[in-house]
Amino acid sequence: MRLPILFLCTAALAGCSVDMGGFAFQSETKRGVTTTTTTTGSIGVSTREPVLTPEGECSVGASLNPSTRPLPQEIAPGITECELVKIKAKAPTDVLIGESGKGQREVQVLYSEPGGRELYLFTDNRLSRIVKPGGEG
Image (cartoon, rainbow, N blue to C red):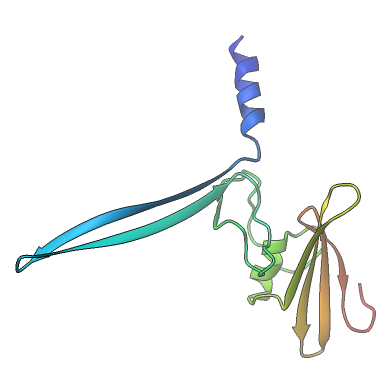
């Protein structure tokens, strides 16, 4: 009886994300004058792999996804959007995010390099094609 309930809870929580924000007040009195300051903060944690935002940044700073893996050594089909940015070690020139007719996330990541423009095409957060100057890809 407990196993089906546990399975149901696990399935319901799969792919969840948590965004927390808050603020704090701090008062300090010096020479009869009280000063109150406010501090704000936020954090995001997800059980999904991070994806790129339109600004070219990863959507979540920390991932609890059990499939998290070490950074790949090279750019190759199958890497994630954020892995590409980490390997390149610089923000992309442009990021276009859309959806296919099948409901899949499709992302085009453009880098302007000295040798020409490089376009990286992702489907559901996995690199599927690379288009480089000279028709490679």
